Structure formats: C-alpha cells, structure tokens
Amino acid sequence: MNVFNATQIALHALGRNKLRSALTALGIIIGVGSLIALLGIGHGARAQVEAQVASLGENVIQVSPGSLSKNAVKLGLGSSAALTLEDAEAIRQEVPDAVAVSPEVKIKTQVVSGNRNWSTEIYGDSPDYFTIREWDTAEGETFTDQDVRGATKVAVIGQEAAEELFDEGEDAIGEIIRIRNVPFKVVGILVAKGASASGSDQDDGIIVPYTTALKQLIGKQTGLRRIYVQAANLEVLPIVEKKVIDLLRQRHHIEAGSDDDFKVRSQLEIAESATATARTMTILLALIASVSLIVGGIGIMNIMLVSVTERTREIGIRMAIGAHRRDIMRQFLIEAVTLSALGGLIGIALGSSAAKLLTALAQWPTLISPDAVLIAFVFSAVVGIFFGFYPARKASRLDPIEALRYE
Image (cartoon, rainbow, N blue to C red; front, side, top):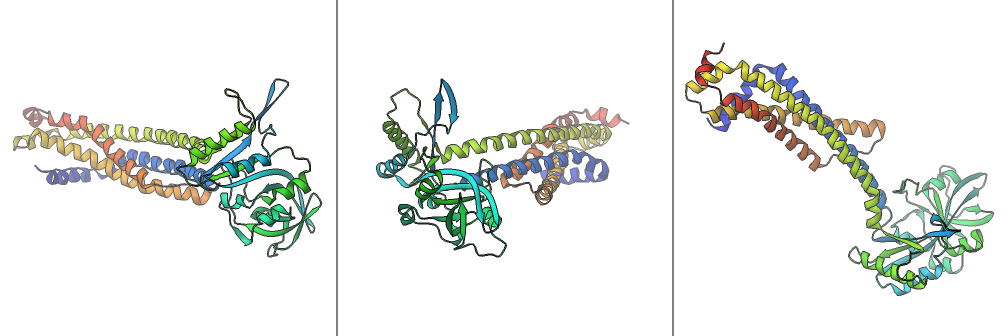
C-alpha cells in the first residue's frame, strides 16, 4: 500500500465520523489559533519598540551625564553636570568617524501663543540634531548653523505642540510664540514620530538653537543634558563609541579604575534593552499557547485509541488479505497527522483573524510573520505524529486472528 492509497483510506475513515473528527481537531484549532494570535501580539509589540528605537536615527550614540555623589550619597544618572559644550566640540573635532554631533539642553516650561498656552519640553540643539534623528519638517524648515552662532530666537515645533498652540488650519510658520516671556519665531513644524522607546511623546516638544536656549531661557549653564553623536556607519559604531569614552575620560581627568562621570549608550544597546521585554513576553505567550497544542494532541491520541478499538475487526481483515504491519501503522499515523494538519490550517486562519480584530478593536499592534505561521503549522503536524504514533503502533501490532474474532 502506497502513501496515496493510505491517505485515501485515512480520509475515508475520518469522513465516516465527521463530528468526532471535527471535535478532535478542535483542540488543535484552538491551540494553533492561540499560538498565532499570541505570537502576533508579541511580534507586534516588538516591532513597535524596534520602530521607536529606529526613530532615534541611524548609528546613533547618546552621551548622558553620570551620577553625582553628595555626602557619600549617589544621586543617580543625570545628576552630574560633567558634560559641557567643549566636550561636544572635542568629539566633533577629534573623533574622525563621528559625522554629526549635537549638544542638547532641556527645560520644561509654559509656552504661549496668542490666547493659547501649553506646557511642553524645550530642547536646545544644533542643526545636526535633525540629521542625526533623520527628522524632516512637514512645513517650513529647520534652523541653521548661522542661527546657532547668532543665538537667533527661532523655533521648530513638534506636531502635538503645534496642535495645542495653534488653531486648526492656522499657518504656524512665521508666527511668534513666547517661551518664558521670550519671543521666538516659528520656522518649521516637524513630521510626526509618535512615542519614543521610553514611552514619551516625541511630537510634544519645541527645538531651538542650543546657544539661544542657554542665553535666553536657562541662563547659568549647569551642564548638557545629552550629546548626540552619529557614526559614519554601523561597522564603525563600536569604534566611535570607544573613542568617545576614551576622549571624555581624558578630558575629565578620570584615572584608570575610576568610574566614569558620564554614560555612553549606542543605538544597538538601546535597541537590545528596549526589545528585551518584548522578546520575553513573546516567548511566554508562545509557551502558554503551546500548552493548548499539547492538550489538543492528547485529545487526538485519545480518539485514535478509541478508533483502533472500534476498528479492530477491520484491521484484522486488512491483515488477513495481505496488509503489512507498516501499512496499518501508516494508515493510522496519516489519520492523526491529517487531523492535526487540517486543524493547524484552520487555526492559522482563525488566529490571524483574531490578531487583526485585536488591532482594529483594541488598537493593539500585531504582526503575523511567515515564520510564526510556518512554525505553528509544523508544530501542529509534529503534534499529530507524536501523539498518533502510539495508537498507530498499537493498531499495527494487533494479532490478525484475535482481531478477526473481535466483536
């Protein structure tokens, strides 16, 4: 008996008990559907985080202040005022593969536009900031190096800030906003980027030249909030990171073995840290869904054992007319695999539909990857083989004479 004939017999046997076959496959359908839907949620969350990290730009290194100790108490990252404009300029001049550098200062304050006002973040950056972040304007343009040198009172605003400060349909370009009672001319509105990897709204902010921020808004300089550095390409990113660390340790007179008063993180580190939680969640969801598949496999084994008992006389007749043990085993194994594979296909369709429904109704990001579909289908087939093997083996080892006597 070849595989084709064995498959025909298996399908005929399953067709004789349609309801029982459907109920048996239901366990696999639920298991595979759950696996696809949960993996879709996990992959969607991970893809969203990766997109948020990508919104930082390409080959980006962030240099932040380290921890300041006061009375033997460490105040935490960002408390140090060690980073200076001179550090940023040194990186620009002395690190060859650093193609763009932007020092950054930040305050949060109330901004007024006409009869409207809004509390938002004010960032002082250089024009390189927009290059590093790959952030274009939806309207207008960004400020220039000349604006930085002249400490010009110009501002580029995010989409969220623009919506809060100006009426719908109003042209914000060229309008005046007041930051701490200092007038700034709006020269550009940025393209929306959405939430960052940390969850903050990147569109709720206003960017001005850092020289203007220091002179007009902050006053006394207490150190930079951050220095953005962009490497020429991904290959030199670790080299640039090391050169930046070595340069800052030298400039800050940090002795060997002493802790840095700054923190350097590359985009690769940020991405790894941001996606770690999503990856763990995906694995946990997959394990939970796999339990449903195992339960479905146990259901297949149970029904196949019942089927062997019911068809004992049929098995005896087939053996009596020349069927080999391997033919009997193949027939029952194909029945089990067919049940699980059909259940897997239906489960994939239902799981994909459930994921799309979650996206539409709950606004959850979901992503059904081809790899997840393939893994779910193969897993369902393997479950059929694993849990169908024992019943098939039991059927093939029946004694033909005893089987013919069975009533």
